[in-house]
Image (cartoon, rainbow, N blue to C red; front, top):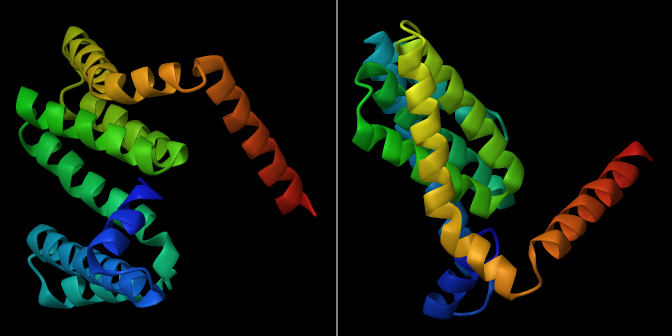
Length: 179
């Protein structure tokens, strides 16, 4: 999705960098707005909401990093919704968003997945069968929602080839950052 979303917008509005700005800047603004509303809801304070939104803006997220801000902002709201009312449909939303996060970048899925697992256990830790059942359902839904991508990878190079490419990419990035 990191490549396809910008490519899709360029197919619609034309192939230039202004189109990228039309995509990224509104998404970053939308995320700041969501954080503002979320902070206002939680704190019931306009000042806290302004500070939270200002922190998002002042964090200096680069325009190319809009996917991280979007992924984590939506995950935050979805996790909060699940903790307030842990329903099956909200668990489905969390699983679907985890897969979307993975389609942007694999590490985003780790961030979202860890938050979801903590939320599942924290929402109702006892009896232990409840969070265990929810974690199992969440993992099963993630696998189900990932099946189209998994099948695509299997058809176009295989799972082992894909894992090899990902591991080599991580290794080269680690060497680059170590310099």
